[in-house]
Length: 427
Ligand code: HAM
Image (tube, rainbow, N blue to C red; front, side, top):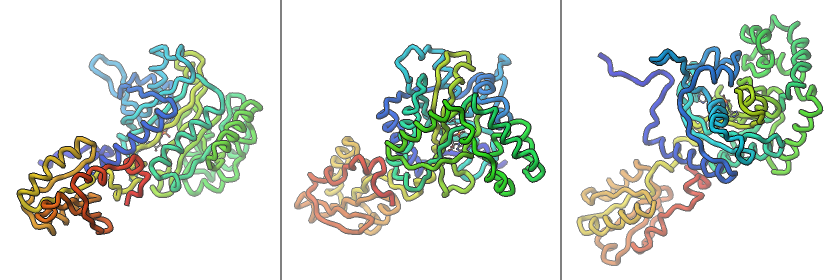
């Protein structure tokens, strides 16, 4: 019998990668909390109805991608395909709406969607998800987008990403625009891909973000929703843009950005990369005023986004050093080992991760070991160093080395905050 393997589209996150995950999670927490967001931890499954009503019956997610099952009492349950519906369910259930507005919440964790797996796309994946509830002011939209940009800046990724923003209007905008869009698309129907022909009847807005090459020339000439905004939606959109400009945020206005979930109104945004092939969205979100009420809650507006953590970790790349210990301590002989043991312990107590060799192998072998561990430094103590209570501190990348007093090792190895979060170059 063959050994059992993990389910298709579901992966283990191995130790070599976990350092990057921890860095991404720590950065998300720090940036979100700096803006006043607080963590909420939610269940991984909910009543199926919550997602059907929350995300929309006509969306791909609800129609084709949910992991739905009956439990032993016959209730229909679903592994959450996204977090927004669950956050709103909790907001309503726990009466959060009496708290000062906006109520700012974030949550990190796995989501589940049954899609064809490919690079950057999985059936269990992870999101860092943020929601601000109970406030319509457009400055909140701009501030939230700025927070998303700050997250990518803190990881040193901002230069490799592009921010796209759009407004898809509100209930007052939509019918007029859909009529214009249908008027444009219907005569061209035969030239659209099969899926878009079906969308034309069900949800014509979704034609705009079709990726099929043959549809592109048609989509490019489609009327822009920005030309159909109601006066109110238009004022909101202008104000969001003024906010982004005041914050110095660079963005591309992308009138095709309609998103794949049905709950959005007005502001929508995505962060895109050219480096991950077809899976080019690293984060996405927008406003969903009216959704809380549709879930039988108070008439509170909301806006949020989710970051795809796998894609961020992929962008950070394999050369990231954050998973590696800061140093390998290399004693050359028994006496040096005994001197380094308590030093290793006090470094670890102070938050510096180190590995200690045991003094039995030749220096050359230990340096090869240090290279394989991907440590930044080797701390070498032989008899001569021991005599002067010193070590040789070797930078494994530049191969430069110098003598340092053993009482100063902590100062040399303690990482700055920028190093830990990735301000430093990862290579
Ligand atoms: P979404 O665009 O469906 O939005 O997902 C957000 C991000 O999750 C995507 O940009 C992508 O990076 C990542 N993602 C989605 N599906 C997969 C997958 N199968 N494998 C790997 N990564 C994936 C939402 O989920 C909304 N709930 C966001 C939101 C929050 N809007 C308002 N509040």
